[in-house]
Length: 386
Image (cartoon, rainbow, N blue to C red; front, side, top):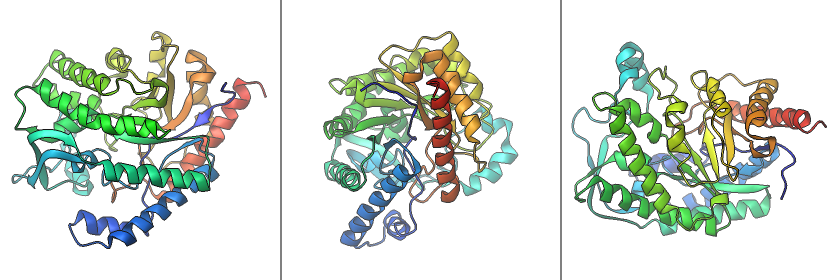
């Protein structure tokens, strides 16, 4: 179907509703939960969040990731061959080290006090395989039921990429890193296939593919980083074999947290890696002040004809609600470079990376999403001369 306007979407994770939070807190604390009551609350919450997205004007909606505990650690809960155990003393105090934390130690000492962190670690102690079929089927069914009650232009479900889950647990089983990463990818393939077979778009989330640069270099080299990134991309492409490209999109950010980000690897330095990924769309940060200027990368880089861009035109990391005129300007920059039919308005990242964690207040989140819709309408009027 020809595109005659700027469509809107977001990256996926939305603030969980108050009625769902008690169930999630209990589950994450290992406390008993009335499973039937939880499942009923989850179903109703997904219906409500889909309806709210549609009413806000979002075209390509999702379930808010309400059925997941965390944007990437949820996958570990759906794997066999992985052992969970208490983390050693001092581990898990920050997401990762790197130059940004070395440059701003006082800031991070304060910031990390409020960052959710796990007191556990995970290890691959046997063959990694997928056992999350029931949970995935529930998420698919809940989204399908919500869309039946409130239809949308299209819908997606996010899934983690191999590069963003394999660094989270130790390899204590596989002989090589290659075998280990490909095993993780093969397990995740079940989700990629099931989501597209259900008729939804699969979004592959990969914050670590960029954020690992700051963790690896130094002491490693740029060549070390690129070797690891290429391995993970090979594994992802292997997992995507046979999955319809036009029903896939790939999301990167630079770790998402609200910090200085002075050590982020520039988009230009990884654009060749990004374009190697066999997906139909690329979701990139383009609204925060560290990466907004990188729209100019597309002045000299050609987007393949069968791909679309989903630039972030609203930020998840600030409480300031973007003006729709600014949103329109951001969209038009990309439209002028890659074509108006190949731009979909999105957010920089998710608004709630974990079940109990949110970047901004829900009221601000919805105001930002509405501003994005209004900005897309302005851009549509100007780009199509309406």
